[in-house]
Length: 213
Length: 193
Image (cartoon, rainbow over all chains, first blue to last red; front, side):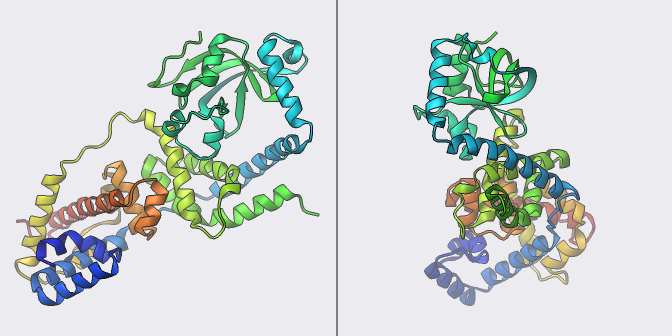
């Protein structure tokens, strides 16, 4: 090992991240080369000083309590969803519901369910990938045929979009819209977590143009 | 008899909440704003909880939480960023090497490098220096030097290749140390060359 090679490896040597053989070569070079030994000593001293000065900022009091409360809420929400999912007739009902919405977009399915008018800032995501922790960029590359877009709220919950407008179909299926933040308004059918969209306005530098008006 | 969801939540809280401070620290360094950092950490825990079934017990949970936090940050804030910080690293490298040579290598001064940092730099100045690092270096530096994560764990937490971790840490350290030497020089701990 020469001095130039040693200098390139120095930080990784100090971090104990070199393979065994490379580490041994560095140690041999250090015993034979006083200038490199001095450089190692200087850099190690600077690193010790730096690490001693780098303090971790503590989370503010109250944050943990808020997180616990959020998790409790999410757990309650999840219990509801889990009960649906565990139910033996869930798949059949869900399939019928989706079919009915697609075939009869203005059907009484919505009218018979109570709705509230909402106006929310949401993010359009591929729900399955989003739950799996994928970034929006990664979600845009996901072409899984069964993955549909949904609206993610600030509290982490999701709303589906009704398919009763051609424009909302674009939002449900277009991969390029994933990650778009927007303010949406419409009627929320709480029982089926579905938003009948009336307006959608992109927020900030939108990566896509929404066709919905 | 306890509810299964309560058990699940308790297990998650017991496992994940002990890493609140490291997560907040990284969140703060990314957002540079305490309120945004709190929101980011809260959302990270919520997402981690929803996805807890996929976590493999025994694997590095801190790296897993860091990864969720980093992805959440990218999703929430990347669109708002105007442009990434740009650094002329060649100039920094040359200046740093010259400073090390002049201050410590050419002649052995009474002040050691460690003392130069400990006595010549205020804690707030270190915070400012860290905060001035480009985003991509800052996370790696914090995970390596404060959280003591191994290169492999940093690569997993930030979803970047191992070689990228190595080069970012190298550059991040250089930028930080160069800045600290400047502070020490201004206070007269190191000579003005």
